[in-house]
Image (cartoon, rainbow, N blue to C red):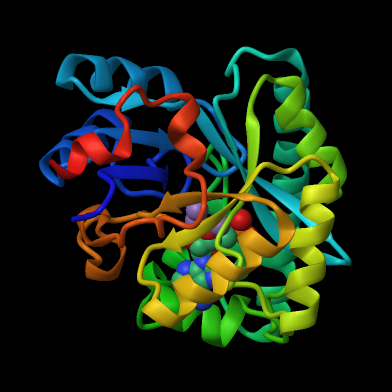
Length: 285
Ligand code: AMP
Ligand code: MN
Ligand code: MN
Ligand code: MN
């Protein structure tokens, strides 16, 4: 059995497909008892998720997934236990929103030059509050420029492709500071998903810890046992606690289903202990 915990899920306030209340229904049906809604650069869905969780008897930890930069690359830092009304967080979100819309326009132009319907794709996203590359990918699929979302990344949006734009996100240390200022703890998201050598990955985890980071996602959606081992080693080596998050965007996609998450290895301290009154052993009885 897993931990019944999922501290990384998305709603339609960023690039997930479900509204927060519908997402809570899916989580409840999957047996999740403690979760965090972690939309990209947005806390717009947190209040609705918390209200739905209360009605369903689940515990909601207020969360966000912030876009950051480390050594010129985009990385993701999850903030857990943040105060959604924090002025420091609101200022960071406002700056990220500007950066997102600027990047959206730049991606649209590059796509157009590269032969894809970039202008139409951007036009279709005018009313999206937090436009992500997932939204652009879906628009490209809709416009017939790609078969599906992964194909849109492979052909148009990924590194080295016509629509790729280097992201101008705030630095890692500043991002960890914002999370701390809003009362939360910082978690390095999906550490194995970045294109980094093992040495670079260790430096990232080290820099993250040095900046005041608390935990690292040891168990992520779709991770194989050897990947969990690798992430566990990274957490233990850098003195970070462990987190568990499916990164579910769409429950219809099998590999992201929260009920298929592995259990956090005993060797690492669970980041959720601070919000969770249930001792781990009690769950096994
Ligand atoms: P952004 O924050 O705008 O750069 O968008 C990043 C989001 O795009 C990630 O959170 C994923 O949901 C999605 N994404 C990134 N790479 C891929 C990929 N290769 N295939 C499918 N979705 C992807
Ligand atoms: Mn996403
Ligand atoms: Mn992410
Ligand atoms: Mn995510």
